[in-house]
Amino acid sequence: MSLTQPTQDEKTIAMLCHITGLISFIGPLIVWLLKKDESEFIDANGKQALNFQISIFIYTIVAAILTIVLIGIPLLMAIGLFSLVMIVLASVKALNGEVFEYPLSMNILK
Image 1 (tube, rainbow, N blue to C red):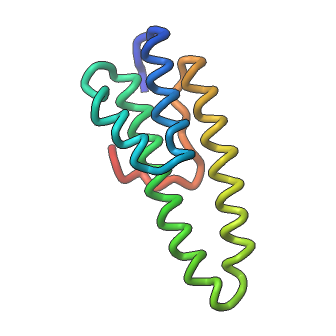
Image 2 (image 1 turned 90 degrees about the horizontal axis):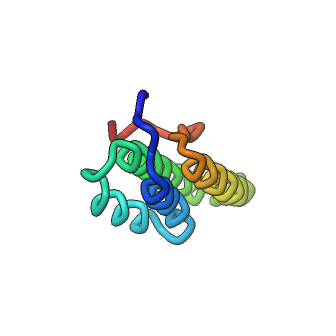
């Protein structure tokens, strides 16, 4: 994806799209909805953050169901750690002016 060089404000807002995912998927949704029309860079980062949050939510539901057979407990821990690491990495990339594509993320918003 070819984007123009983002401003520092765009980088900061894009970082917020990712980092607010540590609280809830509502954070990235609000930031993206408010700022997506102002910048292609923010729009691209917001979509990536939301796709990741939706994917993590689905993976968490599946892992929660699998707690019945006990494999879900380590899966939930792994999902939590994976999510934390990926969100921090994506936030740093956004501050550097890059669009981070999360691994294992479903491409729901295009």
